[in-house]
Image (cartoon, rainbow, N blue to C red; front, side):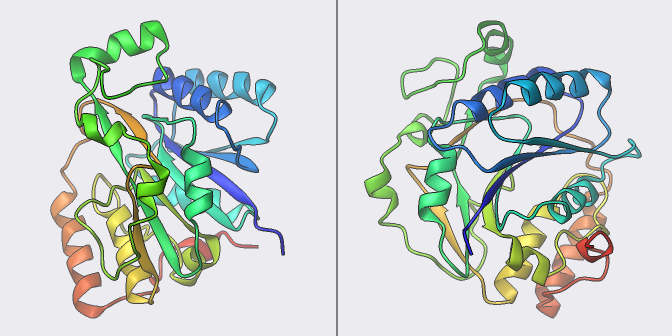
Length: 264
């Protein structure tokens, strides 16, 4: 069966950022077969941005929206993955501008029984307004708008020196990860018991690891540039953290409240 890919973008009420993310998506050296936008209840402005890019894009852009009832990212991500037939998922957040070879890097590095996690370069808080005004998409070591400058280095040859490993890395970030849809479904996707900010993404890959899926770091490849913003409320963090601790202690793989309720 031919391998097909989907770029999955999680977003919530930041159309200015999503505009640049989608602009960077259409500028990829290798396009995914489709783009999925998991929208956790954004207002009309976001819908208008998406409609603009749907008209411009050579690949389908599919918008999945749910009512805004607080931070329910896990639910809308599950709904989005349930609706695609693409067998490889590359996931980012709607505040992450992609390096032009981002999708290409993930697809080239993809291997069976492995999920990938890539680098995140932070755009400085004071530079975000200028990035929007100038519609900046490209950054390098000398860009004044960023920190973590060495993370901008794109050297695919060096990236190949990194091996897959067991367990979750401290370098893992849920805003830059890719995995096989079959591995995602096998653990029942995101745990929708997670509501509010925190731990839903690390819990996902911990359960993949518990099932035997290895992790591999994309260093010097698969780069995103993260637009600084205020962090969402952490009022549910302690509860979410306790759920993850239980996942680790019990070596949980498949959870109950997941993607299976949306699968046809």
